[in-house]
Length: 193
Image (cartoon, rainbow, N blue to C red):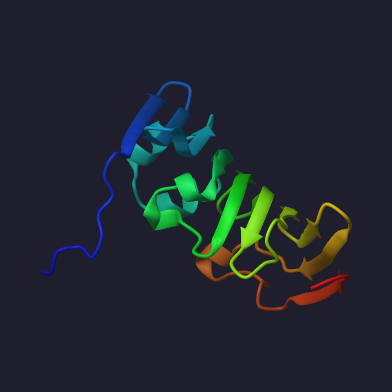
């Protein structure tokens, strides 16, 4: 076994777990924190975990758990890209980024939304002094999804792009879905390069 090629120091893992076997409540909250504050946060919870039934008969546990409603959030607090740990750095890009991904519903029929924002973004090779702002929004309801991207300079909108997909995810976890029968469309406008 070879030693890792890189190591990260100064990042702590905080973990909170709460379980109530009587009510079916479960929550897992995890945070990665370094000297500058939170790097990533993760929170997942459900109020309907069938603990008693699972302990009485674990047969089919995965299929039953896939039907349990839950909510989950992954958050990247606003942070300069250069201040992120090396394992999530974006080479050649500077600026500030923040974002949130939320998943709800069930594992068998998830709904997903995401929002990512970037400010004062610079890519290696850009004209000195120039910078961009960017917004990405994603929404998927288990059958249809949309992505919208907007990139702006201080003077104009540089890129507007969107995509739409029709893909039913219900049952995909167990190979019982129509997710392979999907359609998609996309369009965009690049105003400047």
